[in-house]
Image (cartoon, rainbow, N blue to C red; front, side):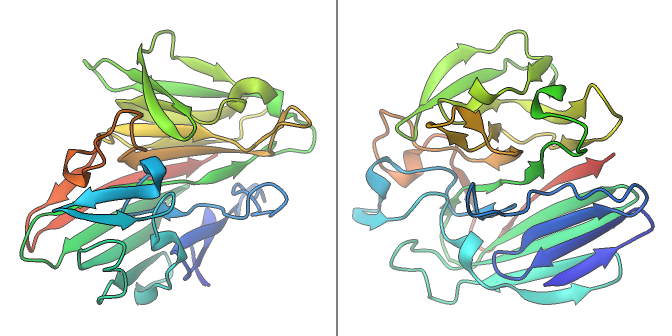
Length: 292
């Protein structure tokens, strides 16, 4: 575990998966991240790579070969090392070094930067293509925020304020058996009120969203997740079928990638939402979380 802090925040990041486990606001004393309680969901903010979501039948084809890979890929379970660490920032690195060729036939280096700036945690990704050919991949964030933030509040006191990207149609998608179905253009997106039934049918997924804010109607506390230019975002909480309730957290998940569509060919190069990096080049992306 490594920690970074400034006058506003203290963040703790686990080397396993380079996962943010805790963000505490030093001025109001609140802990914003989900606790990782295994009774609901044992993770807090895994990094999804080299796929986001599930593959159809948990497999894909590439250059005539078939590979199997479980949901969200493997980077969330590898051990990163500290490349650089200051009081307010840390960079964590991982190199594949031949360890995953049986499930993903590319060599790469991943570097994840966590930087505190006032009341925000900035997250930067770098994926280096170490091959002599194009590399196909997806990457996504999966941070879970604790609900409610105050003991005097309930989950129903919260809502998500959604800011679409300018001059783009926002598409809505639904999951059936973990596969993507397009629902069409999303309308009336400004506010999504949290309630137990919201995640009864799994995650809510949109394209072309720039920001989602988690706000309370009883206090000024909340979280803003800003992710301009990300092609997709998922909103999710664990749903309990027996109790008919959502878990005491909500995930706001900026993605460069998405689960397989129901009619996928299975060819990784044709996968919906897939990205590529030219040989020897580096992919970079950034999002930030502001804690209020």
